[in-house]
Length: 400
Image (cartoon, rainbow, N blue to C red; front, side, top):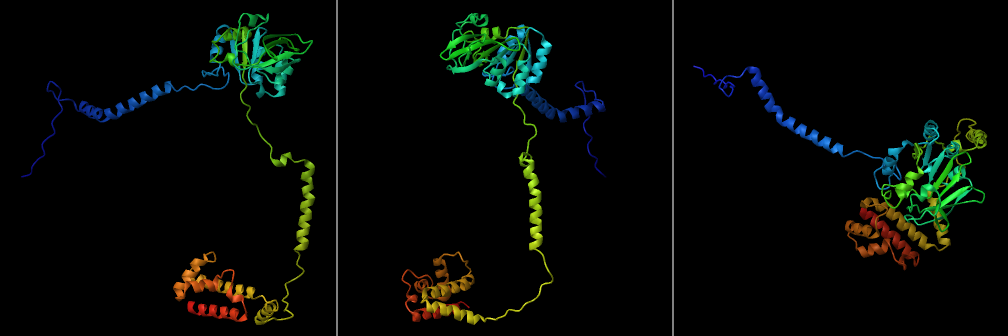
C-alpha cells in the first residue's frame, strides 16, 4: 500500500467560500512583489525630492541669473517689472537686440574687457543710450572720447551725487565708489558722485548719437548691496527705458590655433630644402663604397709578452712602483670579486670579510694587502712590490 501526500489547503474567503484559482495566483504575486515595489517607490520619492532642491544657477560677477551675493538677479527682476529686458551673451546678439528694440532702449554693458576692439566699435556705432559699468580704456575711447580714468576711491564707500543729473539727484547717496573719471576741456559731460581725483559717475554725449553713462563700479548693482542707500534707485534710474539690452559677454572660447611651423616665416621654411639636400649629398659622399672589403695583414705582429715587458720597462725607468702595485691590486679584485658573489660596487669591508671567510686569512692582513692606507709598505722597494705579487697569487690559488 502506497501513501499519498496530503492535499494543499484550498484558499478561501472570509466567509469560508473557496477563492477562484486566478484570485489565489494574484494574491501570491502581490505578496512576492510588494516589498521590492515599496522600496523602489521610496527611492523614487527621495530622488524626486532631492532633485527639486538641486536646481543649478549660473554664477559670476553681476550675472543677471545668479542669486549669489555677487550676482545681479535681484536688479534684473526689478528691472523686468517695468522694462523688456533682453540678456545677450555676445556683441552680435546685443547689436541685433538693440536694432529690434527701437528708440527707447538702453544698452547695459558689463565685463567689456572680454570684447574684441572691433566688437566695441560696432556697439559704439549703434547710437543708443549706453551704460558702461567699470569699462576698459578701449571702451571709453569708443563710447565717450575725451573721458579718462583719473583716480580711484575706496570700494564700498557711499558718495553724495552733488550734481543736477536727475538719475543721480533723485537717488541720493549710493555706494558707487570705485574708479573715478574726468572729461577733457571741450567735452560735453556731467560728473556726479565726486571724490578726490574725479567723479564715480560721468555722463557724456556719444559721437555716434545718444549718451554714454560711465560708472566706476558695479558693486551697487549686486544682490548683496542693491538695498543699501540709494543703490536700487540709481540703478533703476540709469536703466530707465522701455527696452533694456543687458550685455554680459561670456568668456571667449579658443578657436583653432597655430603650431610652431605656422609661426615660422616662409623664407626660413624654404631654406630647409637646400640644407636637407646638402646633408643628403654629404651622407652619400662619406658613405660611398668603391668595392668589396679587402683583407689586409698587419705589417708587424707584436706578442702580448712584449707589450707587458715594454710597459714594465716604462714603469721601472720612471720608478713608478705605486702604479705597478695599483695595477696588481686592481687586476686581482677584477678577477676575484665576481667569484665571491659580489660586484664592483661592493664596499671594501664587505670584500675583505667575504675573502677572509673563504680563505681563512686574517681580515686585517687582507685589508692591508688590498686596501692600504697612505703609508703603503709595498711601494717601498722592489722586494716589497714582488712580495705583494706573490701574496696575491697565493690568494688566487686559494679561491680556485
